[in-house]
Image (cartoon, rainbow, N blue to C red; front, top):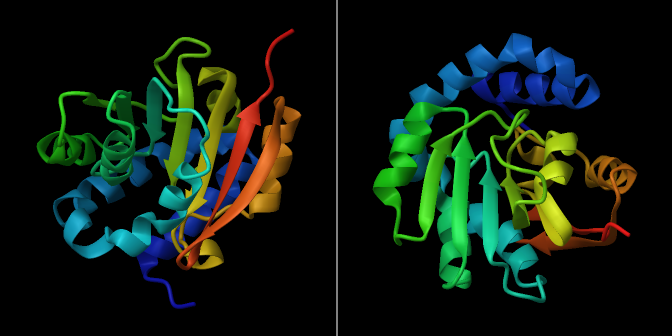
Length: 206
């Protein structure tokens, strides 16, 4: 596995923040600046059907069309657009820390049902239980926030385009453990292309 300096930095930040989320405040600024710089070439150099394959495979396993979908770490919006295509009646919101990525996502939007906002995944600007489906593709998971904004009975998908070779990567067993601690169950590990995804259901509040 040969990483560029930027990819090594992404892996370092991911490993550190998943272990200790409070470290995010140290890395937030450099991480945002890195992705601001990548935004103009992101779609042409990073996004392809193979890039989306594990996420699309997980979407196929969602049994009920979601009404509201959140794509966390949307980048230039590829995953959000894939969700909008699959579920033509859904409202889709994509959020990203990088304002320049959000500008690209807004330019690339393919429907009026898509909305893109600048937001920090560690402190999402949405009410509890706002979304029926919360998706992440190659993004650092902040598990408390993923759980908070997912409606009871809703689903979370955490996907990585190249499995353990993805610069932003968390082992799926760790993802499963963290989500289970927050009331998720019904786990499915799904392969798509070279990537892997985990689909989980948030337990209903009694």
